Length: 85
Image 1 (cartoon, helix red, strand yellow):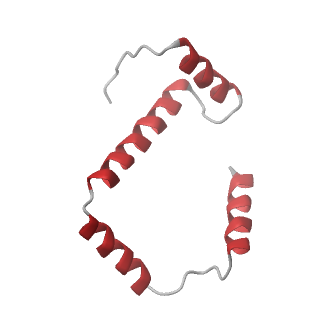
Image 2: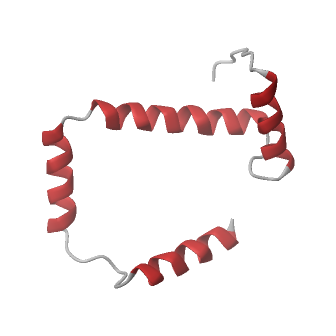
């Protein structure tokens, strides 16, 4: 693993510290790794062409119905998962 030194504006540093203090992340390093991972995912999605997205959409549709029948079931599952973390 490579170590980088970064500088953050005071406002971002305060938000980062608050997220760690609130238990959202184990450390500032974990929070920054999560942010970089999200940025990376967003970049990958932005680079996808419409045809690639259409192909992925069709694969999802062709894979069949999901295990949830209604939005309320999805929300309940999300709450259950969130309460476990």
